[in-house]
Length: 116
Image (cartoon, rainbow, N blue to C red):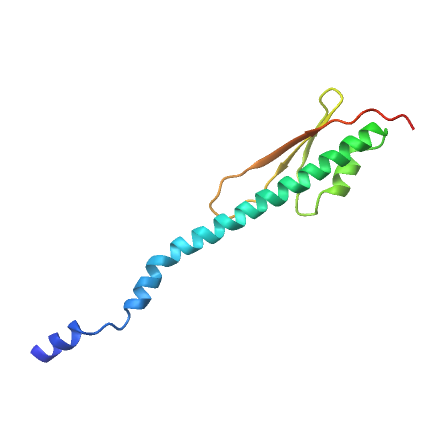
């Protein structure tokens, strides 16, 4: 019995697996947060370009929704388009990653009216 106790006290097998299990949730949350930041920045960039294209189409008398749809990547759908006086405003939902809340990017652009 004494030998068994001495042998079990000095045994470190499995301790690294327990340490990894303790750190793994933190690593997963950090990776998911980084992915969410990338999604927000990519959506913001796409929304900026799309609202500029929509405002340009409006100034030329063309279809604003068609210009915005052509400018946005396929993964960004359900875009809300509104027309404040002389401007174009869009609201683009950010793709949701796992545990993070839903976010929406709102952008507005105005261009001078061009008569073709």
